[in-house]
Image (cartoon, rainbow, N blue to C red):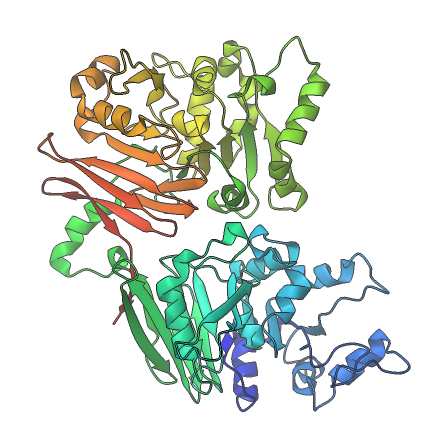
Length: 599
């Protein structure tokens, strides 16, 4: 619930909030505004005698503060109501604080300044998903509600508008936004409060939507990607977001801005109380006319990349191709792709010689080395984002056939391969004549709706026909040397480090067009169906069914063959792009997935 500001809707907002939180079964928390802090008066001055927890909560429960909220519990309209605040004196470990968060079905956050809550709970790096931020997401994921008033509303996205950017006295240009990190409950959304009553709000929001791609959240600034949606909420108005729907209550209007056509087009829609619920979706999700349903149904099961078919069609598996370099963003987001709240994860570091068993290190020394080298992955388990995390590494190819070695894969929801050299991965885990037990269990992770991926060498091993290096001679164009990979994606040829290593485009496109060589190397390969996927460093390409999404800093590239084998179409996808592959009259077609309103 996004409340644009003002007090005239208090009763209506509370009623709707309680209903969304579960009615009489609701367990509601309210985080007091910075205007009503413990030990301080309304002007922010310290109280002479201090203030105990009991005295503070009594002051909060006054009618002039949040008395109507606390009355929900007193009148037994809800199962429980509590004020949520940190009490470092009596509860230095925040045990009570997070115990309340785990049980709540609704959190209400009034605030004046949108930076207050992120400063308290996000510690400057909202993209890392700290415990409070994860708790907010869990409330919504379990069917509850999170809402904010004024600055509380504006603090909910990953990137927030902190105010107006400074400008010179003689600058009469548009008002532009000063940005900061928010609470990350909403990703891909920019929100602004008191939208119609303050000069420059429209200017700064639309300017940000058009030009936000110049910002990079991994370089110390929050990013605004191509598919970001803009939401402006007027005072005395609430926008309620649920799934892909938006509705309004209150006296004013909500404003929804959708980008399309490569950021060149913005569609602006207003919504007010009494209007039909608005649906925001991609073009491919648009309801079809009856005569087109059958054709679209065939597209829904279309699997151009050759990813293993899911046991449950409603939970397709995911494959992540990371181009190498900085993996910070994909480490943070990888657990979210596993299809379960707390996935069981296996990390395979065998692409690196130092990460495989050897006579030069004891098992304990190897274990210590793995923990030190991949501490950021282990941190995911420490933070409670993974149910379990184990390493799977070996120097013995026979292990790929042993039940004991692959036992962790049988229950895994996520499998990751780090960078290094893809050739040892193929030698250790792949048998193209009789797939190893390791191969079969890796593919089963995807069939169960989980995620498998890798960076650099870990990207290369995903393919069935794997590019393992160069066979160039006499200074001619680069030519790929081949091996067999895991076969997680049977119909692709893949390249990593695409922007950082010369000759990659030559060897990828040369192989893509060499149908005779592909057929001779892999008799089960279908050369005409092969797709080239190339990923630049610090970037990940995420594939699921017939969809692609790009995250990171740079570009991912898709090379498609036409029916006329002399034609190859090259698509460069930017961070934030989402695309869908369809079967066209002359071969595969890539369509960017822009948002649109459904009437």
